[in-house]
Picture 1 (cartoon, one colour):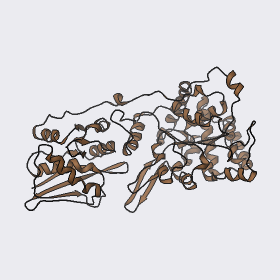
Picture 2 (cartoon, one colour; picture 1 turned 120 degrees about the horizontal axis):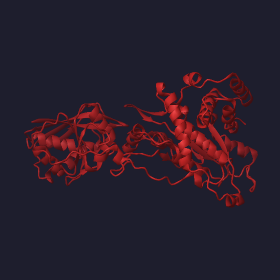
Picture 3 (tube, one colour; picture 1 turned 180 degrees about the vertical axis):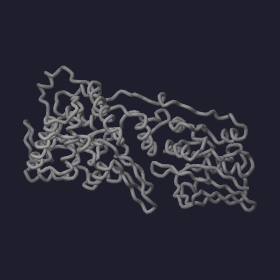
Picture 4 (cartoon, one colour; picture 1 turned 45 degrees about the horizontal axis):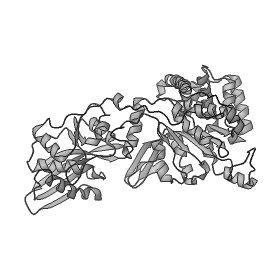
Length: 506
């Protein structure tokens, strides 16, 4: 007897529909799984056998062949336990059920309970895209699967419950949760009002947040670089539902969402240690997974002690910063992960950390200072729009400055207003921030008057700016104009944007 059920294979952030064919024939008991299945799937034979026997169903001791099609698609993980078990029950005529529009996913425990999986939002999206109407998922994945609307989601606690439902119906209730219910607006741990002084750095971070620009903070130990960076998510624009679903898909694949918080509603803030490898940073592995830069998609990637990262890891950032995607190539094909993030880097000015400090003397030679600075290559610096010196706030000034500065809520209001202008301006080309504006559109969307062009030309000659720096300065000046409510970019906007390039070009 032959039975067909359907499941899904997770490949990067996408899912492919897999047909599970189960054939049961007379003969000596043998249980084979074919179709490019890895070791984890081969081991599912033992889990499926035990789960069926321990769930008040009969496991037929005959010749069982399971084919996972298409055969050329690599398959891994325990996703296939539940569909294989359902196929065996159908093929042995213990249950009659039309599974042509139904998808089954889940890992089985030996006792028959169904365990949660990673990447459920991608699986549900694939099911909807291919015309399936029902999706049976582990109970703990039900909220996440419900993020994709237009499917009947059935949360399964154990295999016996599922078999009873397939036989009689209405045992498992359809699951539905609105996006509003799943949206958790949590308080931020860091607020801009708690940062004393640092008006110049705060201004730079506001510009970065308003336009989606990259920032480098340079200063001595204890000057407040890390604290400033950690406040950034608190005044970034709120994520749209579309952005939340994008981020949730990435986080789901690596197991960072839970049943209680299946929707990522706050912009990510990722801060990997400087010993992080290139693969961990950009993504990859035998079965490619997103790296830190993809986990920071639509949010912030904070790299503290920037020069201490390996040269390979830093240089690997170049292409994702420009293209906003990461391409991981393997012999079996290529996968792409999103990487539209804001880079916030922080570093000391030298190896000892005290170059330029008023109170402590730097112990580095000029050669050591230059060598430390050169750990950050020119092409990487070229991609950082705002390069800011963070000076240590004097102790007596900290005591006198008892009045709190602007809160993140107030700054976020200005940032959101600036982003709204950008959304409206770039609606025709489907981008949301000045930093994303392609070079070919700059002349038409950010026209400059003759005086501004003259100022920029002089700066290019004097500072020996690259073409990339030239266009990034124009985009930063557009953001400054948006914050100030000016319709056109003027000389003083360009002058401020240029001031954030002096660190690179001096």
